[in-house]
Image: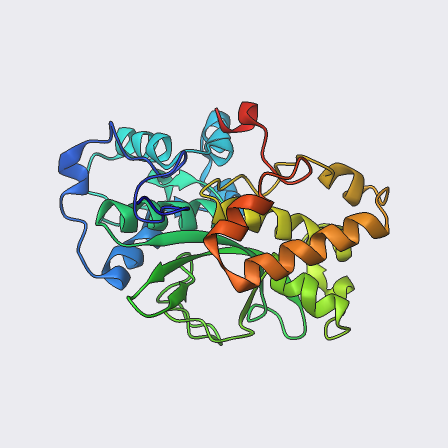
Length: 272
């Protein structure tokens, strides 16, 4: 019987069909070996701006599928994906793009993997910053890896994040509802986007990612825009309580069932 949610086979955004097989051939078999080179394939927009790239290059940030990201990457430099690019030859993207590529490579090698959306607590003391990571299953448990920063000197175990170093959107929401965190300190650095609605948004995105639909960090659907505008109330908070509970319990049938809710499911037009 097929798994309720298949984390080994490619999903809508992690399918690498059509990508040059020779570029993928050197991808190793061990999970960390797979994840480590990804930090040399993507560059954040803020880091790319001083490079004088053509303006259209920044549209790469809007690409959802990993296959299209890699085709753009290989058009810039056809070297294998295990080869770090000079900054100007990397695709422009966010932490979501780093995480998506590592997830796609892990699945390419038959390793169960998934992307998680939430907040890193190791970037700034006392704050949770909007962030995406990758998880792979080692046969016993899910291991959380910060693919973007793997190998960098940060106050966290980036190859195996410890509890509390990264909070998924649901984990952060549950902690907020229990009074354990200040929601005003959770959000997107460099913006005014902080507070409970930011946590709610990442909880919904994380539920979608658990269903193999890894959206862009700024994609909105369901009642997310209303939440950001402060136009939702107690009923939506209760729905997010359910999202947090189901994602924490991580029972695939329940995760899949909840994702069918009209306020939570990503519209097909955003996927296709």
